[in-house]
Length: 100
Image 1: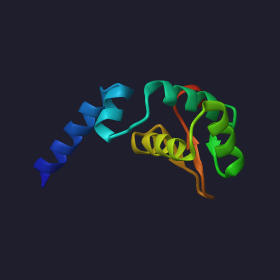
Image 2: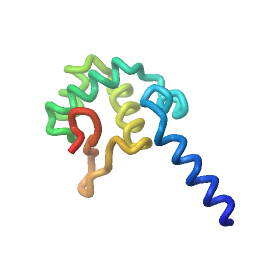
Image 3: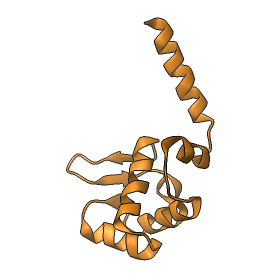
Image 4: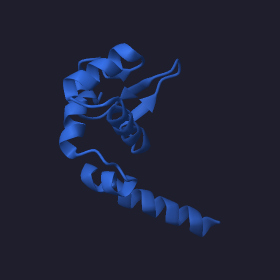
């Protein structure tokens, strides 16, 4: 059991040294680095939160993304610690221009 915990911690440590592009490849993301940069710039204009159609629509329009691409990028940041779920629903992005 202890050996498994050590291996998991070592694996997480290795991921911590990865850049965003490497993490995207590991996570199976289909978005490009440019799309993610456009997404982050657009999310910053919504106070870094995605709650309802107003925010999602604004991000999609500004970044030139489809709803599916926006959701995939949001899931990418949730999976790799660049976003957190909000208690009342929605997501707060915590990376890039939205880093606190």
